[in-house]
Image 1 (tube, rainbow, N blue to C red):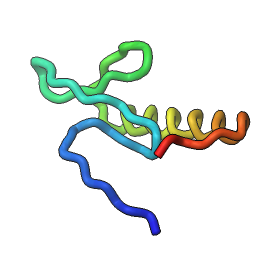
Image 2: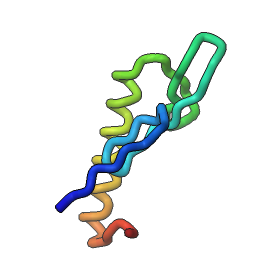
Image 3: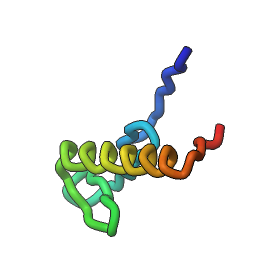
Length: 68
């Protein structure tokens, strides 16, 4: 059975992909890979999904597991 975890953070977490949130002068934003900052939540979610896919693909490719 999978346990649902709740976080008190504005970071966007999708599986193993996480996009950290930062507070800017214009409000909340997210830092994308490479240091780019976006205020668009959908762009941040798409990046978290992509990171999760990449991590899972590499785990399967090299027959590794996530630490628990």
